[in-house]
Structure formats: C-alpha cells, structure tokens
Length: 259
Length: 259
DNA sequence: TCAAAAGTGTTCCGCCTACACCCATGC
DNA sequence: GCATGGGTGTAGGCGGAACACTTTTGA
Image 1 (cartoon, rainbow over the protein chains, first blue to last red):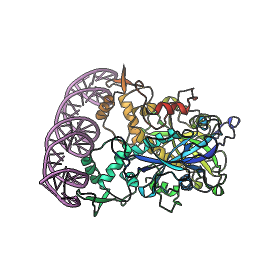
Image 2: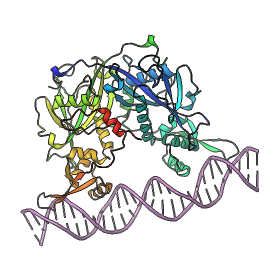
Image 3: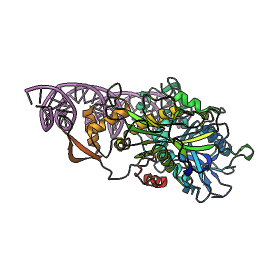
C-alpha cells in the first residue's frame, strides 16, 4: 500500500545515461533547396558495440552529486567540446526495445542550442562530425527518432524570441534573425511582417550601430533585452553561462516557479 | 572520444522510479471560491522513511521488460487502483538535492487523467486520499513542485479538446465540457463563445439524445469524434485502454511520427 | 407564467497576411 | 543612375471577446 505490491516488484535498475541533441545554424553559404538557411547538428562515431562505427548523439553517464542538466552539459563538453547557450530537457526514453538486444537503457535526452561562434568549423574532427538535419546518416539505436522529436520541439519553442537569439548570437540584424526562423521552421516567412512582430514584442533593443554588407542599405543591429521578469514559462530551461556549468537545476527551477 | 573521458566517469547509478500526477474532476457539488469546478488528485501516505506519514505522489519502480509508460501505469494501479484514460510523460527529476539526504533518486514523472467513473468515492481509503489541487497538504520530497508543474502543463495541453473529454467521460453536454475547461484553467470562460469554438472545431458529434436536468431546457449530448487522422502532436501521449496496459510506448510513438 | 439553463446573433477590436511602396547605400 | 537589400504603409480578413437576445423546458 502506497509502495506497491512487494511480490510484484523486482530490482529493476537499468543503465541511465544522458544524451544531447544540439543544434546550430549551418555554415555561411549553406542553404537548403528553397534557399533558406539550415540547422546542423554534431554526431559522434561510436567506438564500441553495439552499433560500433555508427553515428550517434553525444552523451554520457550521470555524474554523482550533479543535476541531470549538469550531467548533460558535461557529457556534451567531453564528447564535442561544445558549450551550449541553451539547454532543456526533452524526453526520457526507456523502452525495452530501444537497446536492440543490449542491456536495458534509460536515456534522459536534452536539447541544446549553440551560437555560431562555437561552431568554428563544421568539418569532421576526430570522431565528431556536423550534419545538416535534412541529410542525416544512419544512426545508432533510436537516435533518429529522438532527433525528429527534438526538431519538432524546437519549432514549437521558437515562438519565444530569446530562443532564436541563442542561435544567432548576442547581436544581430533583423534579417539574420529572420534567417533563423526560416531555418528552424523550414518555411518562408514574410520579412516585413516579421520585423513588425519582433519590434512590437518589446524584447529587442537597438544598439544604434549598423551593419554594412555589400552595396545595399546598412541594417540596424539589435540585441535581445534580458531585463524585466524572467520568462514565466514552466519548462525548466536554462541559459548556461559559458564556463559556469555549476548552474544548479534547482536554481533554474525556483527562478521559474510562479508565486 | 565519443564515450567520454574514462578517468572522469564513475559508476553513477542512482535509483530510478516512476511517479504519477493524476487528475480528476472533483465530486459533484464541489466548487472553488469562484463557483467553478475544481481538479482533485489522489495522494498516498508514505509508510517508510524518509517522510514517513507524509503524503506523496503514487509511484513505484521500473518494471523489467516494460516501457516507462507501462511502469507508470502499473505503479498507479498497484497503489491507487486507478486506470487513467490519458498518460503522458511530464519530466524527469534527478537533482541530487531532491532526496533530502537520502540516496540519489531519479524520478520519471507522468501525468494522467481519469474520468469521473473511476473516482467512485473521494473519501480516504486505506492510505489513499483525494485532495483538491488548491488545498494540498504538506508533501514529501519535492512533490509539491512537481504537482505545480503538472497543473501548468495540463492547462497548456487543454487546447486539444480530446484531453478535456478524458476528464468528463465519453458523452457530455457542452456545459459539462465547459466546466472542465473552467476547472483546469481556473478562469471563467464565456459559454456562448466556447460553444461555437467547440462546435466549429468539427471534433464533436451530436448523439441526438438530450440530457434533462431540473426544470430547464434539455442539453444536447455530444461525443468526441475519434475518426480522422491521429493527432499529429509530437508529445508521445497515449490513450490507455482500460484493461489493456500492454499498449507499447513504441506503438504510441510510431503512430505519432510524421511522414 | 416564470425561472433557469440552452442556444443564437451581432458588434467590435486586434492581429495576422499580403503586397505595394519608399529609403539608404555602394558601385 | 541603378541594383540591392532595409524598412514602412495599408487594406482585407479571420477569429476571439463581450453581451444582448431568443428558445425550450419543468415547476
């Protein structure tokens, strides 16, 4: 009662790990068939069975004494050397069929965003390689399905403009921000209306500086306003401070809790 | 590489369990201060340390060879004898501070809905008791926070009308459905506009029968249309068939995947 | 015939969409 | 000047919010 029927219980302690789907805007010049930018993500090559040699999501073990989020952050760091600007829990997978005959495995999956600055080169390096999301290789385990889910989730999250700024960088023109939206949704988006909507949100701040590109009119450079109340969203996201992965999930939680 | 730095890794295998926040419409006659219906949820009294004697969410261990969802379903069944009509993963909690000095614990939390038929009596029975969500007792661990998150999530999920029908039953009048919406959101909602919106959605089907209550005009009885494509939502929900908890999470997944 | 709840009509307003149109700049 | 992207104006439409109104029933 209250603890369950003892005779039915078994000591079921499958392995637990964290994995991360991490997204970035593609390199300069990259574009999808329709001309808009694309999202890319890094994968790591497996060096042991099962699926040795296949590409897989970066991941690792839980760290003792650390939050799940910290474990995800460190797993990402140790496999890809990336430091995400945004990190949020996605879903926990634990279906017995997913390990394809191996040991039962529970994976707590996070999704993350990095800015362009982190993606110095998209070339293969050791066992890490970036791929455009619409042209992925065969993946180990059920990682393809996990990525599809993460992409869907990122589209529905994009309505919060600060998420988009995580991909584009601290300062940006409205055209650049517009590119991010098109890259994530895959849909063309009227630039004129996009401008108005963004400016009307009150979250953008004009830096006063201009970006000159080619022979056309220079564009105003904006910055995301981080002032005001924290996002009252109940989704446990965290903006990870570069070099400060000590951010406790607990802190993120309490800052986001209502009342 | 790809697996992490071996010297940094430790065998970190904290306990894993599932917990369930399960919601139902309050008993007849129950209403909040503003007169609309309220949501209630069942809690179980802990019979061991820590927090012995405190109220806590129903939960249990993972079952070997079963999906996470099945484990949640069975944990709920064995502790409360309830069979939810809707079950969806909520969040995974694993912060080291949450066990208050006990062993590290990862909890995969589900949220669920039951219809009124299951809530035969809201009275205390053994170590299970129902509480209105706006008047909860002190809870064990971080369960209060988990419940707050589940309530927030249920509000944002309510826009899918089939979720609401899980609370009200197979057949219902528009007034009853309206009550559910008010109970979940806690906000008054214009009944006239609500009617139109629901009917315009095309998801409701008139059974042709009427419900006579008191001396007023009888109300048309509707049913939710389950025909057409499955919800193309990427949220891994499952409608659990009563007596058929064998529904594989995998099935739910593939049915909901696009393309 | 009256109270109570079901159900309908109508107006107003804000937001989104589409698309036409000016503006600033480098070549 | 003129091509190129930056930036603004504006008309139409859809949908939600508010609320007055009619209908059907039992007492």
